[in-house]
Length: 296
Image (cartoon, rainbow, N blue to C red; front, side):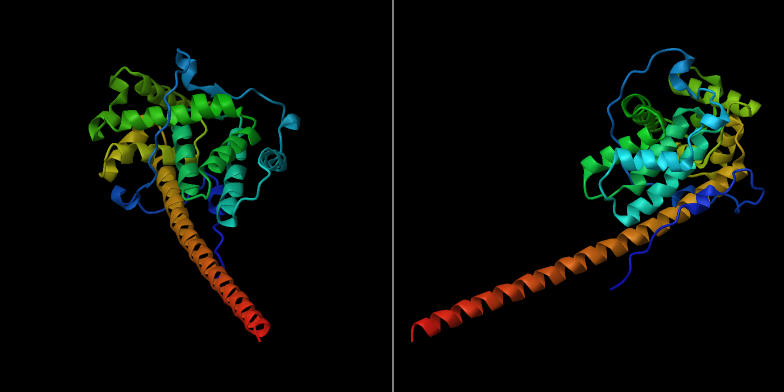
């Protein structure tokens, strides 16, 4: 029996300040997301603060540990999760814990889009859609971000808002956000301003995935546009290239693991069907034998 390969997300733990990088970004058509998104749009309060969820400063001694966050998740969702999903999910929550409690962490919608994209891609094909939503809620709860407020009014809503906007954009309008006024354009302006100071911006791989998702939805296939967008946002292009390459490799391994899991489940179903059929035949044979014996 072939073993189901576990997928590691540990490469994501590498520091974003690492000097090494992968070759320049591959053609955008080589890295596609398959998930379709459709979420209810929800209103968020006006003013610049609508786009930001500031972390309250906490004394280092009071910061929860990774073990605390993982325990929070296991407490919020007690049902077993198939290994092919759980292995990546557990490592992902560790990485987001480290991001969540950095002093420079500040929520933004591009980060939300990246997280929603990663989560939905990871959980694609999960046996129960209801459980998939419940796990999402437990995940956010584990990070001490209220599942009702953050999931329904921020994470999912912001992801949908950016997706809808990106579908109406092209290569030129994506990069020229600084010359325009609009809800999404103002989000990008705020990110660019914070990223330029480095004090209130925490770059992460989820942010990089969010950027790429925008390019994909806008049907932008020119790799140079990503470079221009990074420059406009004051984000390090080399870090984005490296993080997208790591994520692309992860998706490839995840697809292979899911295929192995699917083959294993189908094989077990076939074996179970054969056993049940054999058992039924034996029962019929026994009954016929008893009947013939009684008729003598």
